[in-house]
Amino acid sequence: MSHLDRLRAVFRMALNLPPEADVDGLEYRAIPQWDSLAHMALIAAMEDEFSIMIDTDEMIDMSSFAKAHELLEKHGAAAG
Image 1 (spheres, rainbow, N blue to C red):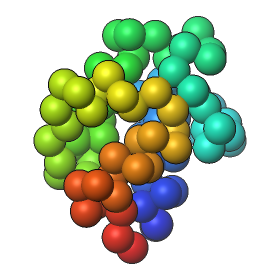
Image 2 (cartoon, one colour; image 1 turned 90 degrees about the vertical axis):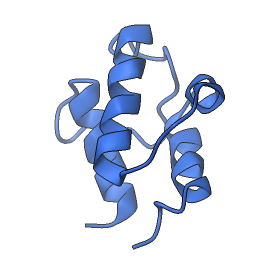
Image 3 (cartoon, one colour; image 1 turned 30 degrees about the horizontal axis):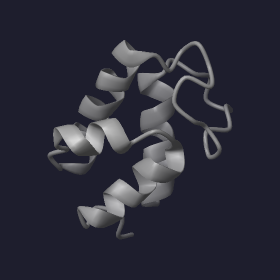
Image 4 (cartoon, rainbow, N blue to C red; image 1 turned 180 degrees about the horizontal axis):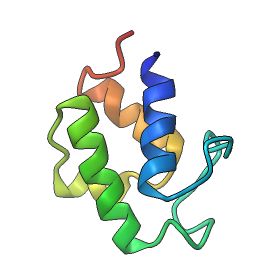
């Protein structure tokens, strides 16, 4: 499974979305499921899945699926 597929799975799980949900264009608060509480669950799930630590500024800046992917690349977790 590629890092993008893993990230998609994390988004779907943390935001309680169906397995077929398209999350690639998703942005914070664009759907009711992605509220501030779900955002923290998403951060925690990403940290667990990719063994990274996300700091406060990064949490605030992570406002979309694309930004989450950039964050993984920054942490070197986007390989494979």
